[in-house]
Structure formats: C-alpha cells, structure tokens
Image 1 (cartoon, one colour):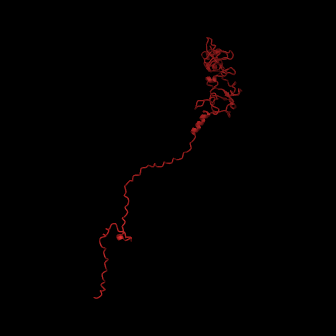
Image 2 (cartoon, rainbow, N blue to C red; image 1 turned 135 degrees about the horizontal axis):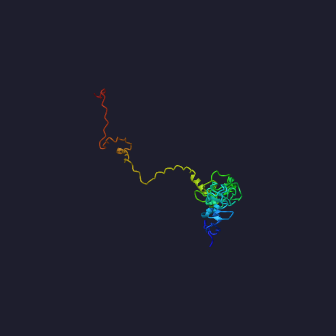
Image 3 (cartoon, rainbow, N blue to C red; image 1 turned 135 degrees about the vertical axis):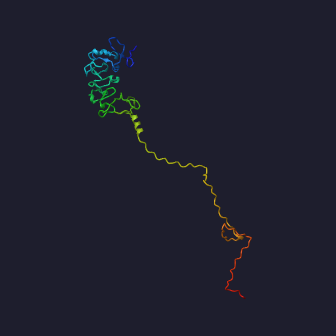
Length: 270
C-alpha cells in the first residue's frame, strides 16, 4: 500500500514523524514545511505539529535572531542553511505558502535565474516570501514597487479570480496592478465617455385617411343670380340691386315725363 502524505493526501510520502511515543504520520518534504513540522538539519529528525513540543531540548531548535526556542510553533525552517527563525523576529506572518521552500534573507535567491541577491534589492512576494530580481520578472520591473507586490504564482485578478499562469499570452499582467489585462481593458471600456448622440428629430405627424372634422359648419357662398336679357336684347342689361323687386315684364314701360313748359314761353297761337 503506497504511503500517503498527511497534508496533501498524495502517495510517495517518505518522511515520518519521529516522535518518542511513535507516530504514523508521513510527509513530503515541502508538505512537512508547509504543515509547520519541526525539521532538524543536524539530526534529520522531523516532528509533526502534534509532537513539535519535543523539539525544545534539541540543539538546533533555536531562533537565529533571538537565540532562544521561544514559540516553537512560530519557528520556520530555512531550506538553504537549515537554520530556524521566528516569524515574529523577522516580522513575517507565517502561512503554509510561506513556510514551503522558505529561504532566510541571507540565502534567498531569485526564483527565475536561481542567482542570489540582496533581499533589499529584490522583489519579495508578500504571499509566499519568494524573491525575484526586478529584471527577471515578466514584464521586467522598472525598480522596486513602493507598495505590496505578488509574484505571478500568487497574484490573482481581483475581478475574474484568475492568475497569470492560467491566462493566455495575449493577456499580460502588470506589476502593482490588481486586475489582469483583459479585465483592465473591460474597465477602461466601461469607464470611457460615450460620444454625444444627435438630438432625435420629432416624428412627423401620422397621416390618416379620415378627413378632418371642421369645428363649425359653414355654408358655401351663394353667387348672385345672373339676369338674362329682356326681349332678346343682346345688350348687357344693368345689374339690379338684389334688394329691389324686379319689374314685371307684362307692364308697359313708363314714358318719360316731359318737362313742364316754361312759364316764360307761351305756345304759338295764343
């Protein structure tokens, strides 16, 4: 039956806990550090977190900074020199990710080129405490960031939740950014001001087949009657006043009155 790791559950675990009372727990080397086991480089002895108190009498169970055992649960093992350090003495909040493969400031090497570098001149990931040369990152960093920084293995996009390892080559990630390239482009598109639209022209009134209903009925104007010529006379007769009564054609026209004789004149023969 293959031996399974107490932390990850995978087969191939070969490092047992060597507690005095015996312990059946087995670990992979990185999993032992991530679990908080005490590892002794001198005696090659490992104690699981449940039996880590037995390390108090061991010679190398001492912090290289304060020189005392202190809190054994807060000791972290350097994979470079094999010394132990309290997280509190280095002002580091220890997590499983930081404990796995941890290197002290004197042993820290760039995770890309594997060359050493001074801790103050390297980019140190706030999540795993691994170091990188600024010129070894992709894309290359121009100097050291003023704020916190995460490597590409620990960096996660705050919008989509992915990290650069799972993104395509067309989606670059930038140092100090909280979002990936795709999400940054989507944010820029959403924040871009839209072009002003032309004012909408009012729609023309809808024409219907129904004729409009007049507000007040009006009678068409009646032209005056045309008078026909009397007696077949083709000459144009004068128009009569429509208010006067037209003459009766049966009546004889009146003779024009003769002017009365002048008193000064006397008819002949008188």
